[in-house]
Image (tube, rainbow, N blue to C red; front, side, top):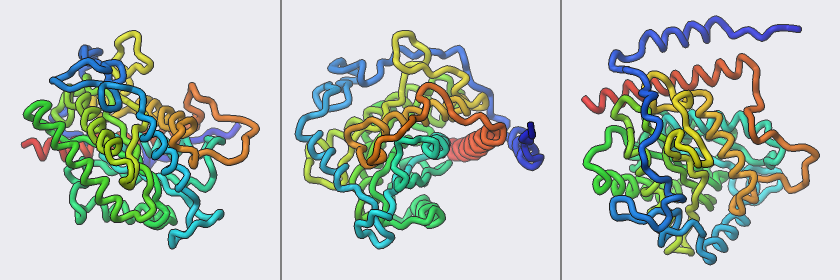
Length: 356
């Protein structure tokens, strides 16, 4: 059997990235396996910093009926489109990511996963426009550089702005301070600005799906530690509440997968271990962390009543496995490691520069 070797160039790049890591990197703190914070769906009508949990207004995890109807209607408006934006059965549906370093690491892994997903409509094109070092504050101006990079990635994928119809938005800000009352309202305003800018740039944008940060308890830097990682969920909750109160607004904003979990606390549907973060900073996802989020994204788009456009119209004869990562080729794993190291080191260096 022919062996698949990892190119020497990749090995050298990985070694170089390790050697060039900033001296401030201390390493993940694997002792912080839980914080005692309660995920929003579990918190429900309970309070955190005076604010109710739950995914929807009133501490509820049940979406209001009218909001569900508008979300389903938005999904039905998503159709394959030509480069000019006209409905075309041979066209494309672009699902784009917008976010920071963690987002691009996770979504780029999801792109690989989705290629194996027999549930996915082949006309759905995933474009990763999230970027290392591009936090929420960096996207909140129409002339901000990340939007130019997004244009470039869209063009490189062979798609146009008129074909972008859905966005996965996962954001945070580096070096937060001032506690909940300073951080969450600022982040929510930035998220709302990003949605407004995207609406102006993408004329056929119908849906934006939001997700919070993953567990940040292992972090040893101030990029976005706990409780700020947890609190990103409240900014998302407030953004969704705006959509609930404005049913006629475009785009419809809803929840994607809820990613935050309290580390390894028992009784949770998701466990986030120290092996799921990069050992250098405890913040960015490792290969296993990227895979966990990719699986959650795949499961969400394969089953959500708000993402019917994602799924192939005809029944498939087989389905992808849900419980494990379907790719085992050494080269692909090496590439994922390289992506994670590149994103993590570059973003950590940028964050340290900002914090100085």
